[in-house]
Image (cartoon, rainbow, N blue to C red; front, side, top):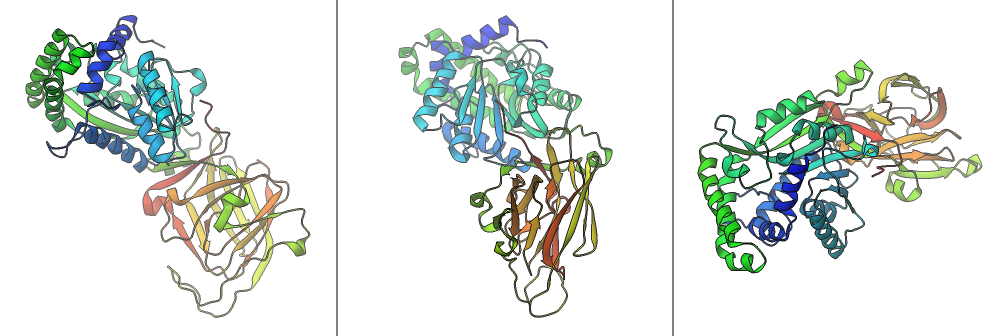
Length: 494
């Protein structure tokens, strides 16, 4: 693996981490704040602070559209600077964010600001280069995030490969960057004043990302915001010139940078620069060809299964201990007919009779099949799994006329449930691991699939439910172009 060259590393530290660099960028690009990035300006009247938050929200929304589930997602911010984006994500969503940055003084500012905001328990800072991340991070993150940092990488293909390595299968890479234009590529006004060896073009990034295992890639061109970004920076120099000098910025540095920015405005209008955002998913590289075919092009919503407790099951159902006598088990709740159904059902009144019988579940390599003897029905392809403790589900149903009881002592099971809503989305679901000591009775209307055994042998459980199955189905894939990707693990070791 190639590491960032000593020359480039020293230039980056001088640009951002020297006393002069810190004072200059915080004022001129951050407007005295901590978001030292370009911004999205709906109008000339937008403040730099709001514009910087606009790009963060833009990237956040792109990531969520690709299935990143906040706040559960584990996030890695590459080139995190003083932590502006990390603080936003942690403060607004409660996410755990790992910041990677080679600049020690910026990292100190990041840590101090996180403490002042009361989010230091959510922020971890790693002083290293983003082209040589810790080996233990492989496959650990749901989202890799970066803003205007990859431009400093001497070997951009190495950075892309590292981002792919540390993402979980199906994970999301979202980043923005300053780039050269596709046609006019004279960018000396930028590289002369920044620690840059070569700028990539949008097509360069698209080619690199697709060649290194990313798919479902989208590029959003934001280049029309560059001229106003450059003009706003010029205004900051003009308005705060004396303060900059008082804070250690030399007049020569400020004057030269102002001239460079003025030249950049013209260069941006001529198409010499591009600025935009990219979002893409890490390929799952699953061995089973059928799973690859059904998931390809879908949005994966990743959630991590939690241990099942009465508190987190809450309104979704009831937890009961297997060592309780059978007569002390809670009853299966029922609703009288008629009930309003989203889909057509059999006509009838009163309570549907309950039946109790076996449900057999069998893993055939990566695919789970089941047979429910109460309904005398077989379920094919109800779940998939990979070799990295990931489970993939897109089909669920609900029984509005009754709940459903599951009894399977000694077998660890994965329950995936959502509250009764119309047309549920992947983000509505929660995943729970039952350790084999307790059973579950789900409430009427709760969206669910069959409990998923976390062992390889055939599992037979006992189920109690309405004999007249007036269920409604939900296909996340067909309705929302989504699949659930559930991780059964101890979480991110970051």
